[in-house]
Length: 219
Ligand code: B12
Image (cartoon, rainbow, N blue to C red; front, side):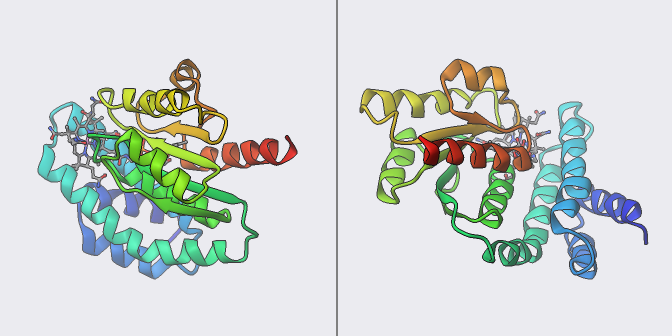
């Protein structure tokens, strides 16, 4: 099967919420195909398309949940491979990552977490529905360089601002770099709330984190 066909099949299996088919495809190809490509070229376009279908009321929450579950199952095979790829890397810095308060979308955050780990960062996952104070507490506990906050819904992006406001009110704004991203987040929003970095895709986010760390180390 060509790579193009593989990506199409990954996309179809995800959209059908066919966990078994998706897992089998990933298993059969994990040694011959870059796992990141499987995510970015196959699974992500599938998730975007089913998201659009959900918006247009062509599919409903159960289908969305099945796709999300299939994604999580496939990641059980992909994640160890990504971690293996990261083991050879020199440690670049420490990141605490989570999805903001009242938002339970974790798929994007988890991709990012895996990519940061693969790129050599020590990453602490705070999970989802994380209040601003918890981001701060954990960042201090792990002496983090970066706080990465994911928000997927238009109703939850404002909690990214809460993190920055809280850092400012405690005179800690200079201590941590703040990165924001997720579905509806834009560079414009990131600039407006005074975030240090933004990434549209998880792969951009790693480049931005590396740049921020290089600046921090050079400062
Ligand atoms: C999967 C999904 C779900 C799953 C989540 C499963 C899980 N474990 O995460 C389930 C079914 C549970 C779900 C529930 C709900 N969902 Co939903 N969901 C989606 C869907 C289809 C995909 C989201 C996703 O995973 N995308 C794939 C990932 C890879 O993309 P991503 O999250 O954008 O992340 C990438 C980048 O943004 C970036 N990134 C992400 N985070 C960060 C952080 C940083 C720091 C950086 C730099 C970069 C970065 O990197 C990632 C990889 O490249 C979207 C539609 C869509 N097209 O996005 C709707 C969507 C987000 N959901 C929506 C809604 C409304 C809901 C519900 C309220 C539905 C309901 N009626 O109950 C609940 C919300 C519950 C809650 N309180 O959070 C709406 C939100 C609308 C809005 N207001 O903005 C959307 C847009 C669908 C729609 N069009 O209406 N959902």
